[in-house]
Image (cartoon, rainbow, N blue to C red; front, side):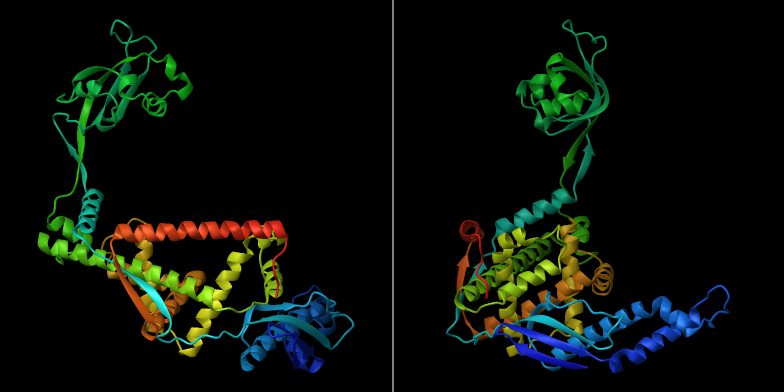
Length: 478
């Protein structure tokens, strides 16, 4: 097979592939022979169908499939051997005619290729980035401790109700004389929290009450919200006005939510059996956990700042016209069309430019990911996923490893994402080593204010870009 490359400009090229009969003939014949061995047609013994019939039945389909395979294999092989850096994927030229498999033996196919731009970037101490170190304090640890106490707390049965009790019982609507109303509202096993009562006088009627005690009260005063009244009585919100003010509740059960105590039972649930023995050790562990989370937050901000500064200071063009064609060609029309692409392209372009910069750093500094590093990254990713599911405590190592293995083997998108995360970690570590960091110690509140201000600025810039694009009706193309 003959493959030639024509550079249209620095960012665009055309690859021309000439496929001759000698390139595919043997492969096509082998496939047809295999079909013949398996073919079973009326009037012929299995495997004895004449080759002429096999070719007539499936020759064109087999030829088309094998030629396309050969084209794809050799196209990728050529790009790899020639070390061509490209963006997106090669696209068949729109202008070329469809291959005539019926009448031709040699085929010429052309592909458009978007080339990755040259990036002028050298990491040295003249480049400076801010690095925010968020200070740990006791208040953060206390919030985490209280969260765990609530997470592992539970309901305790009480004999006497207090202001934070949950009351479970039967509710009945009363008439003006205080008797059970005919065809009035009746519910069984209704749960009410005294903490949500809006009227203190009505709440006080229940405080000090016992199980099986009957309390008459004004339901509308206690819970004036129509939604809450609808949930308790079971009638539509629009019918609430027809309700009587007077109700009574027969208390069947009194409970109260209590946070977990600081003891070894709680420590074991969070950190594993026997890891923490005392309250002091527990608080130290929590403080270390907070420190690690703050470090992750600082690293996230550092990554965002590196990205922002590099995108602002490193200028290069992209093969935008090609990239837009590629995005349209490789995405479902319901997900992206030309109108949607014009609106979203500034963001897409930014993502591609950042990826080009990262690729440049990774190549210059020979950054690679070893299998053991990928496995460790998958385990960290698994822990993050468990945390997202609300499992913010020590997960058995066996579960972590099994889930990590599942992510790498059976979930291709997750495996690629984990790989990209690990590469970016190494890139950021290299940037830290070779450039200058301006460390800034900040409190968590100060950090939040900085972050929110930058988000607001970014949203304003995005809106301005969007408005400019809509007004001009066009996007600059390279």
